[in-house]
Image 1 (cartoon, rainbow, N blue to C red):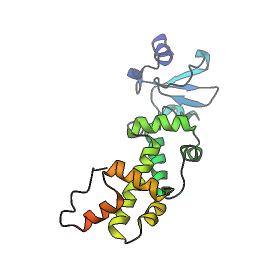
Image 2: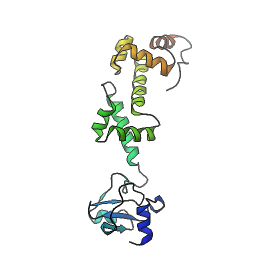
Image 3: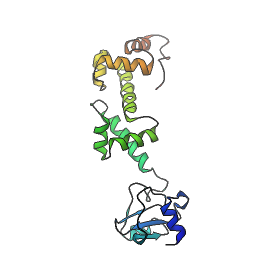
Image 4: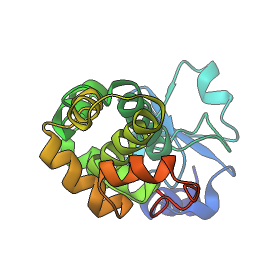
Length: 192
């Protein structure tokens, strides 16, 4: 390893990503030069010309910088998508940031920060919007009461559901349902 490569590792320089990779004898993993993991001791570092060579040496790819997933999703993107999928599958259940984070084996703080960066909204906002989309469908397709719709979509009460619906959609659930049956039903509040 030359001084230029070492400097790229110490400075986490993304300009060297794909130019070389480095492996750590102590942990058995390999990384991109831009990896934000703690700077290793120089004596423990081996440099590789591509991302296949460290695999042949028995090293595992770093889960933070994902050197094996060139042009694929980043760790942040993958984490956000896994969290979003979990919300879409289980929005009817009482979900919290802590419960989602526990299921994904990350801290709530880490999940909140990464999800918001990738998705442009917090996990709780995403959960609320997912529940509202399901509620809008139920209001349109069933004759269930507003309370039944609220509870079925994971809201803790019909009063809370109505308040959130009014804030996000611009009308109450009952008004939304009435608009659906009017001849001018295509203008149904703010888009989500």
